[in-house]
Every structure is written in structure tokens, then in C-alpha cells.
Image 1 (cartoon, rainbow, N blue to C red):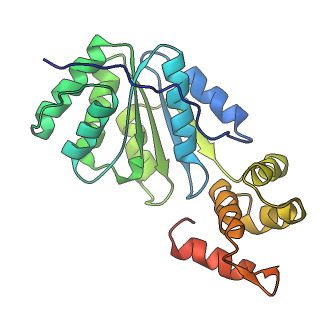
Image 2 (image 1 turned 180 degrees about the horizontal axis):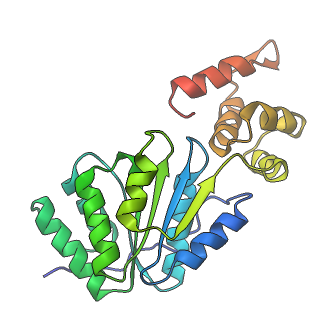
Length: 235
């Protein structure tokens, strides 16, 4: 018998700037049987949006589960079940874990969130499709635009009715994010320009500047800073 504990999903995450229309789309998809696919290139804030969607679902009374997709279905399903608050997840194979997840979704008004879904293999996509077709679970996943067929594979799996596509921020919210991240006022416009208004780039540029790692002769070595972001796999 599985034991479920109450998890704290209601703690607010970092403030999200300039994604009001995208959050509105996710709110409309957060209904029993609803589904959504969040897509965008690296650094656009897909994970942050997914976490905020989970928080909204919890506030709306859904039991929620979240995990990042990996190349091991048993690990991904275990993380989903553990994040739902189940304390005695069986140490079993993928099929047994899938059955537990399906039973949990059948027994609850639930919403399942999967990050990095572009990494999902056929087995995990099959599980997501079963959730969509056999239960009233709300299924929301985020995927990076990279492998040409990744979004199409995921669309077929979750029967998505809502697609949320993320691009660079508009200028005003990009400036607000830069200020909130601690960029000095006299450098805000420079950071916004050089970041391409990519949210993760703005935050990381602020963090690196704060620690003075890229100051040369009292000036910011922007090219060196951006090169480090790419080498550290942040962009």
C-alpha cells in the first residue's frame, strides 16, 4: 500500500517576467484531462515556467508530480512518484512503476509535469500517452527545441491541445529581470542587449558580474563572460 504525504508545492519560485500570456495559456490547460507542451531554445525559461505551472496547479487543488526526463524510465517514474508525496515507492521495474503512477492518477485529481522531455525515449512517451488516454490527469511537459523530431514525438504522445512557445523576452520585462537580478543600473541596457533578452543569460550575466569575475581594468569583459556562459552549458 502506498502512503501519501502532503508536499509543499505552494512556495513561490523566482518571479517570472514578461510571460503573462504564456502563463494564461497554461492556466487554461490546467484542467482534468488537459495537456500542454512548453517549447523553446536553451535558456528561455522553460523550467521556471513549468515550476510555476505546477504551483498554479497545486493552488487549484491538484495533486502534482514533477520530474526531469532521463534515459532511464524507471528512474524518471520513481522521481515522479516520489515528488507526488508517495513515501514507499516500489523498487520495481518500469512496468510496475507505470502501474503505480496510473493508479495514483486514477485516484486523484492530478497533474503530471515532465521537464527536459526532449530527452524522453519511446517508453516514457508511451507512459505519458497512457496517462492522457486512460486517466483524467493533466499532463504538462517542457522540451527544448533541438532534435528536429522531439516536439512532434511529444505532441503525438500527450495529444497536446495547448502549445506554449517561448522566445526572447520583450525589452521592458528583460530590463525588469536584469534589475531584479542585481545588474547595476548603468549596465542594465548593455546586459539586455548582449544577452539577446534570453532570461537565463540575463540572470547568469548578473551573477557573474556580481562576483567581479570578468572585470578587466574596471570594465566588464563582455566577450569573455558570454564565452564562459556557453562553455559552462548555460547557453
